[in-house]
Length: 286
Image (cartoon, rainbow, N blue to C red):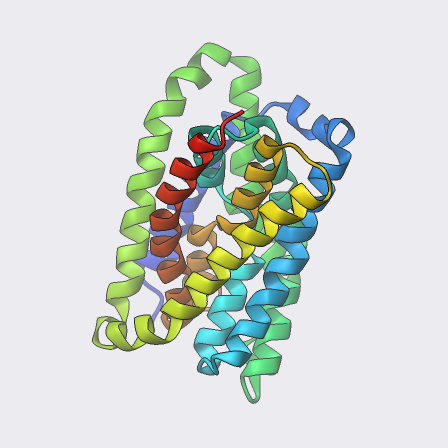
């Protein structure tokens, strides 16, 4: 695929807008929650950064995905939870403060871990994949510019002008949702002639990964004695991924639309399971 305006301009710009929208809901105090909820934050990060990629790796091998789709699934697994997880946590009556903290921490850490995990996956799944690897330093800088810096700018707006930030929160949630839908649809249409085949291959893996991480997140938290609210939050943070970032890494940084398919499919399934999460979360409200 040749680089075009969609993948080189609209996609990263949309992600930056989405991340800015998350930033205007973040306060510096949210980063102090690691000291307030050390067990919950640690468990959430372990689920997000270790268990999720490990489960994805096992699944793509078990289902024998094609090399590009396997790498695409690992790209999705390398991404942090997105702003969507914070909204779902709120609607499911989870611990929103913990959710925001986990999203913030995982977003910071994955700036480094994304290129490392993606490059490992390329070498493992694609013969001669060394030539297709991400430039680690370049990727870190790119992810910083389209995720962390917009978040920091959003936090700055909230700090300097809280009233403006509060007014912007609802419009940015709507804009973020619209951008996400456009990005997912565009990613699927890019290879529309193979869309049914891709869904048949990736769909089961994405669904099992989503449901598996949601279940592992919840029951591991309950096993360690965390409250139901915290357990719901860790479940959501474990299973709700930043699909927009996954598509951006695949389509913009790797310039490979096929690798973007798993993030797009996961994103669609994620929204379907989210409604179930919200329903169950309200039933478990305490």
